[in-house]
Length: 87
Length: 87
Image 1 (tube, rainbow over the protein chains, first blue to last red):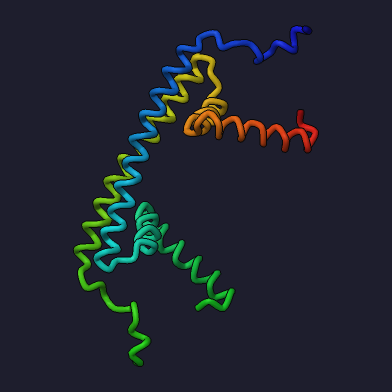
Image 2 (cartoon, chains in turn orange, red):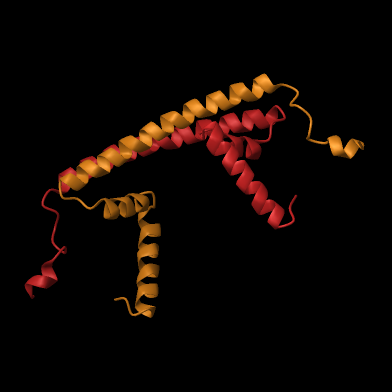
């Protein structure tokens, strides 16, 4: 077998290390999944109280923007909607 | 103004409730962002020890499958790669 055939095909030098990293990541991913379930639950509760989750998601995304960026975005969206006869 | 013009254009019946739901969701989203930063950090540490984060992500996705589903997926991927001259 030529040396180049061996590149990246052998065993890992420290397979135990890989396993430990994967375990850590999977634990964190589980916590993330649990949080995502909590978030869905809050949206679902809000929906039960007559709020619209789709609109909430949209508005929450926008809340990261400062006032000026938000005004610019709103103005730009209006231009595009107007150009497409959507206003 | 015709009644239909008023649909969905008035104030929310309970704006304070909306604010509370949004606060709860934003707190949970912050926790989620923090976890995602932790996960990136672990991948970055693994990379510093010579592991390949792209391959790790790919393999971690597959770990959710049971043995038989994994074998079927592997076989199917091989069929597709073979059909495209990638083996």
